[in-house]
Image 1 (cartoon, rainbow, N blue to C red):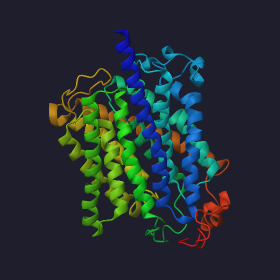
Image 2: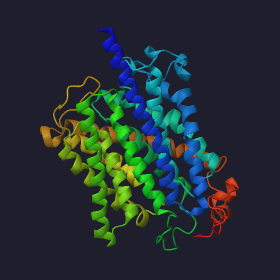
Image 3: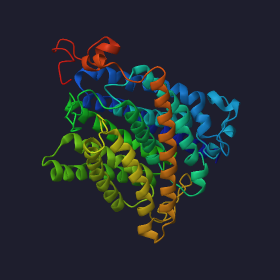
Length: 432
């Protein structure tokens, strides 16, 4: 009997580590996507941020973030739980998992890195390299872990019934709202808006890189969602995979539909962002909804992403080069709401999953939806206020924006002293 149990623990550990490595591989997807959406003169800058953000996130989460997130009833962790120094008993919400603590830490680490990385695309092409890295440190040790503690760490939002299977709220909404705060403090890029506030299109330099990034992120999302089973179960993992894929493809189709409707053309960049918005929306509820519901959730997410990108740009003059705010903040919020609408009665008996109450469309009750709305309000408020304060303090101290000359010349030369494509006419030859 002990041998069977040991084998199960080994297989579950292998499962979660493979899923974690898939999420880690998403780093390359973000790097391709974000650098492709930016101009050639800023490609090195974007690639550098996407590489080094994981360095900072790892140290920050190891030092404090993990202890804050899983400190149990008290959000203030014990000193002996810092630096992953304690045993599993110090991280109360994880005690029931038989997987080794180190494996659980790495799985949570790659999620923390994702939350921080979302911000890099929104503030691209004008943020100071050092200021962004400082913000990343606070994102991984304070902003994200406190939110994670409130749900995944069985904190107060979890206690009132808020559920978020793989992070629509905890990761994507947090990353998107932190991006919004950064963009508001930072301001738009040089040349983005005319004196009458009409927007100018500043095109990215590589649609192939954007598309490759989209495919890599799509692949990584299966690890993102299936890993949150915290062990392998054929039925539940297969269901999560299918619902994740359904949300993604329908998000892309929703974006395609709205692009035709509003832009009169099948805009590939919008379709890819719609795909990602659909995947974001899947992370809250992929284990809790039917496959049919997943298709609906994804389609609505894709439609919302395109509309949001256009409204933020043309109405609110929010300059987000990659659409991160629309994809992650709005997609995450919609995913959390969708859980309250579409969650169905328990389909699988699996001990690692605590199911929400049936959603409005399947149980006739507003209870789960109200819990989700309270969770959204609390998380958006916390993330925006703390992020805004950090960005504002950085602006008043070391500054968060490069000089206008550096922005026009390109951050690759100004901050990194190199070009992404030497010998091809210079990386700063495109739009201002």
